Image: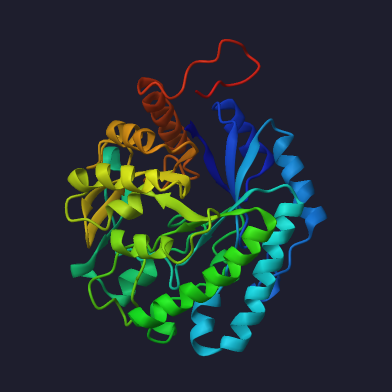
Length: 369
């Protein structure tokens, strides 16, 4: 295991900062930019030369591009109401998987959110910062509009290109989409996985899927079911294909949100999924609270023991990136660079304490053991 940083359409300055923080591996999300998207949010066929040049630009900072985001747009919803159109989109995605391989990329992450990441409020955090949170009992459409976001960035800081990336990603607010029953949700995900895994197996590319965030109540929210919003849902998702390329972007915070008592539940769950060999990257973050009532906090102040979590990943045999994610919000750190720096250092300290990472003996690079 090693620290990695998930960067959203990073500038040269931001890449240099990562290297100064000791980061050697990155996960890049460029959804909503002209690198991977067309005007109007349509899925765009990727260009291998353009993507290869971008990978080389990243490598020019001494960084390894571990994972790149695959934008699936609105294909899941479209497969429910316009199957022929969704099949055309799936062909584009299969093309992009092949292009990723041609460009030297080995892992793509994607998100099965249909209606964005539902949140209801910003709650007071330590020192006057704010924590993004979800409390089902306080849900309202107005709170949804004010505090939810779409997997490209965080509330109030979608990306360097602005919040218009929401539209470019093809995700929509729940009230603007048709009902999605449990059966329809699984049918849509199976439709997507079937096409993606076939392409990934042919290209030798791993696919890391992010579970539904947050877990919705039984019966759904606004007529939408989050079928990959429980540990059983994740198990069923993995069972959709035996391919070793079909796996998870295991968001530790999202999975913790699925349990009434994540402090007790998460350690065995981490070890279980790590042992499948299907975790390809980890969002290493913490929450306070649990199912239907939680807030996203700094990694050292949540309900899950992060040191025990590192040891559980190790016992399960996981060897890959730990990416800090979803730190709080503050006017003192508008770009969250300092908060993410804290999370990176905290994560590296845990890895070193667990004997997973050792201080390099030379200045030529970091040793991972």
